[in-house]
Image (cartoon, rainbow, N blue to C red; front, side, top):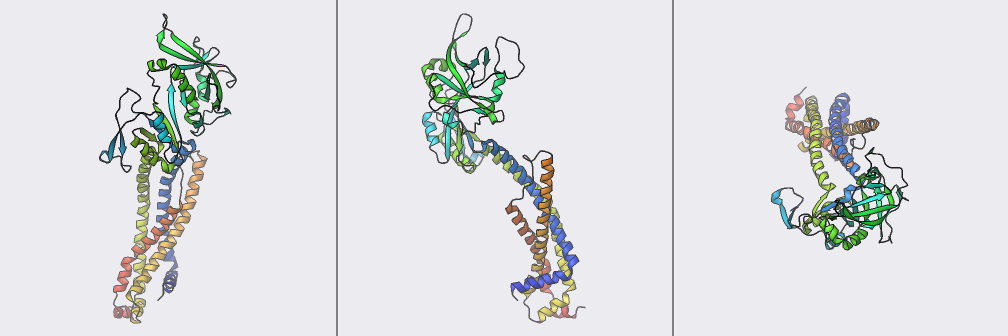
Length: 446
C-alpha cells in the first residue's frame, strides 16, 4: 500500500464518522490556539520592549566608563566568558586609561561606526544677558553628534570650521528652563522668552582655587553661540548642553591648572559612547572593549535579562495552553480506540488478506495525524483572529508599544508541527492495539 493510498484510506475512514472526527479536531484546535495565543503574548511583550528601545537609537549604543579617571587608581575589569554571568566563568583584566590612544583602538574595532569621548565640564556656566544656567557642558566629538542620535528641532550641528574663540553649543529644549537671573528669587520653571539661536552668550570658566577676599572665584570668559536646539523628546539629548570636544580640549590645555584643581584630568576621559552598526554585534564589540580594560554597559545587557524573564513567562503561558493540548491528546486516543472497537472485523479481514501489520498501525497513526493536522490548522486560524482582536483592544487603550500579541512564522509552523506530533503520539497506543488483534478473533467479531 502506497503512502498516498494510506492517506486517502485514512481520510475516508475519518469522513465516515464526521461528527466525532470534527469534535476531536475541535479539542486540538482549542489546545493549539491556547498555546499560540499565550506564547504570542510573551513574544509581544519582548518585541514591544525592544522596539521601544530601538526607537531611541539606544540598542546599538555602548556606554564606556573609565576605572582610572576618578581617584587616580588602577583596578581591574571583570570580563565574562561565553556571556556567562557566573563568577567562575569570568576573568579579571587590568584597567587602562580611557585616553585618545584607547579611543583610537575602539574606533578601529570591526562593526564600530562612531566612538566619541564624553567629558562633563561642570565648572563652566553659560549665560546670556542677566540670565545664567548652571547646567554643565558635555563635550563630544562634533562628527559624532548626529550618529549618537542627537536630533535637532532648530538650527544645525557643529560647524566644520568653527572659530577657536567661540564655544558652539547644542542646547536641549529642557535646558532652557534652567536659565534665570541669579540675583532674583523668582523661579517658575518656565523657559525665558528668548531668540535662542541669535542671542549672545558668554561662557564663564570659574577658578575656585583662586578667589578674592569676598570668596568670588577668578573668572575666564569665552564667547558662546547656540547653533542647534535638541527637542525635549530627543531622549537624554533634550536635557544636555553639548559642546565641541576639540574646542574644549584647547581651552583645557590653555587653562590646565584651573581644570586639574577642580578634579578634572586633561589626559583622559571619564566616559565615552560607542555606536555599533547592528544590535546583533553589540555584545561582541562590548566584550572586546572590556578585554581592553574598560567597563561597558549597553541595552544588550538589559535585554538579555529581560529575555531570560520573557522565556520563563512564555514557558508558563505555554504550559497553561499545554493543559488544553493534553486534554486534546486524550480525546484523540479515546477516538482512535473507539474506532478500533468499531472496525475490529475490518482489521481482521485486512490481516487475512495479507496486509502487513506495520501498514495497519500506520493507517491508525495517519488518522490520528490528520486529526492533529486539521485541529492545528483550525487552531492557527482562531489564533490569528484572537491575536488581531487583542491588538485592536490594546491599540484602543493606547498600550500598543509596550504590550501586544505577535505570532511569528516560526511559532505558527512550530504549533502546526506540534499538533501533528501530539496526534501521532496519541495514536501510538491505539495503533499498537490494532496490530496485536488476532485475525481469526477479529473476523468472528460481530
